[in-house]
Length: 216
Image (spheres, rainbow, N blue to C red):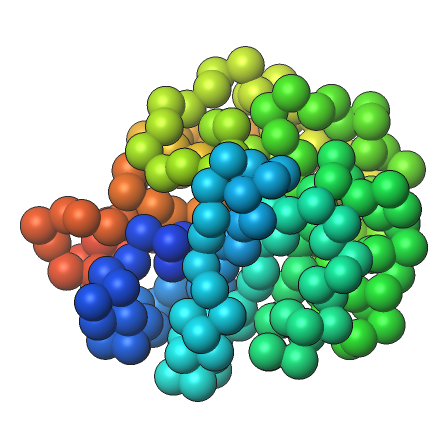
């Protein structure tokens, strides 16, 4: 069984000391730093800023992704490539020409990903799957931390895992991912987990202890 990817959602980090939080998470052994960028339009909130992205990139050599929860994500590919993103997720729901945008990401030498909202079917994006390295299923409606996991997405996750064997992408999940959900969804074949307040942040244990427990 391949190692599961544990990816802290840095929107939930301690912004009073973001540099220390990033370094502590790196020491804890996380795999990918997950960075939410929101425009207040595609989702009703604003996420991390460019300065936050630059700071985290400057203090870790671990992979950084960027989850573009924005309208017309193609307009931001070059910017985040230049800021040091290793993986760029777009929402096909927000892009008139998602295939072209995915090609643009790969042309920049980055890993391409798509993320889909709970109400978007796999059938709506199946033509894009040969173009992606990562396929992220949103298990809450995007935009805010601390929401409840939507159980009806599980059948979609199972379909994605089945298709991943054909198209060779990693299945990721994002939203209300608790330790129990990591255990449950690992058994379904999910490879990567975005960690927020349900599993990692705001706990009474240090990050290293939590990550070790989640790996177990």
